[in-house]
Image 1 (tube, helix red, strand yellow):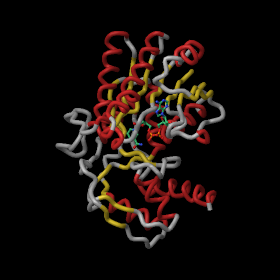
Image 2 (cartoon, rainbow, N blue to C red; image 1 turned 90 degrees about the vertical axis):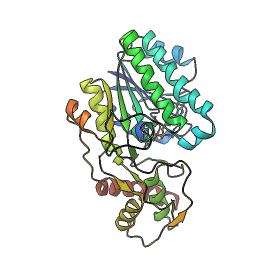
Image 3 (cartoon, rainbow, N blue to C red; image 1 turned 30 degrees about the vertical axis):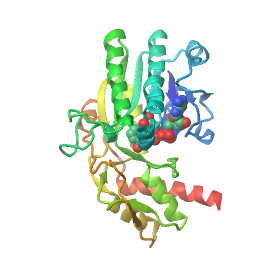
Length: 311
Ligand SMILES: NC(=O)c1ccc[n+]([C@@H]2O[C@H](COP(=O)([O-])OP(=O)(O)OC[C@H]3O[C@@H](n4cnc5c(N)ncnc54)[C@H](O)[C@@H]3O)[C@@H](O)[C@H]2O)c1
C-alpha cells in the first residue's frame, strides 16, 4: 500500500515510517524539516521536503503518488509557541491539516490516521486516568487546534466517507526525540545527565505525566492501518509518574549522582495527566508493552551513542 507519512522526518513519524517500510509498504514522506532531521529519513522512503500548507503539494505529491492512506504527524508541536502565536500554530496545525484533507477527498484516499494529543486535549482532568469520554477542555491553542482537526475529520467522514483513526497520544519518549526543545523531558534530562550537566525541574516536580515509549506508538499506528478501525483512541500506559520519580529512575539507570535544580513553575502547566487505553485494546488488542524502565534504558542507550558522536 502507498502511505503518505507527514512529519516522517520527525521523532515519532520517522519510527512509524520505519515500521511501515519493514511491513513492505511504499512510504512517501512529506516534511519541511522545521524540527525533523534528514538523518531520520528512511532511505527506502520517497522524501518530499515540502510544507503541508503549500498548495503545490497537490501537483507534486497527490497527483503523482496514488496514496491509499495519510498518516498525519506533521505539526507545530510546541505548546508554548502556540500560546505565543496562536495564528502560526493554527496555520500549520489547522490549515495545513485541511490542505491534506481536501486533497484526500479529491484523490479518493480511503483513510487518515491522525496524531492527536491526550495530554493537551482533556485539560486538567476530572478523573484519572482519562478515557475518551472525558470532557474536552484544552488550555492551549495547540490543544484547540488538535481538537478542531478531530472535528474536521468527523465532518469529512460524514460528508465524503473518509475513514479516520485519531490516536490521542500521552507523553511520548524514546530514541530520536529532540533534547533541545521545551518539551520531551526524558530527552532533555537524559542528554544533560550524560553530559554531566544539572537538569532543571520546573516547579516542585510533583506534576505527573503518562510517559509512553515510542515503540508502543508505532505499534498503535501499525494496527490502525492494518485493522482499519475507526474512531478516537487514547494511547498511553495508564500509569502516572511524577517528574521527580522520572528523574530518580533516570539517575539510577544512568548511575549519576547529579541532583536537579528546582526552577519556577511554568505558568499554566497541567498538574496531572494520565490516559486510559482500554478502548483501543478492545478493538485491536493493543496494550503498552514497554515498562518505563525498559523504555528509559533503550532511550539512554540511544543518547549515549549520540553524546559520544559529539565528544
Ligand atoms: N511527542 C509527544 O509527546 C506527542 C504527544 C502528543 C501528540 N504528538 C503529536 O505527534 C506528532 C509528532 O510529534 P513529534 O514529537 O514526533 O514531533 P517532531 O517535531 O519531531 O515531528 C514533527 C515533524 O513535522 C514536521 N513539520 C512541522 N511543521 C511542518 C509543516 N508545516 N509542513 C511539513 N512538515 C512539518 C517537522 O519537521 C517534524 O519532522 C505531532 O503531530 C504531535 O503533535 C506528540
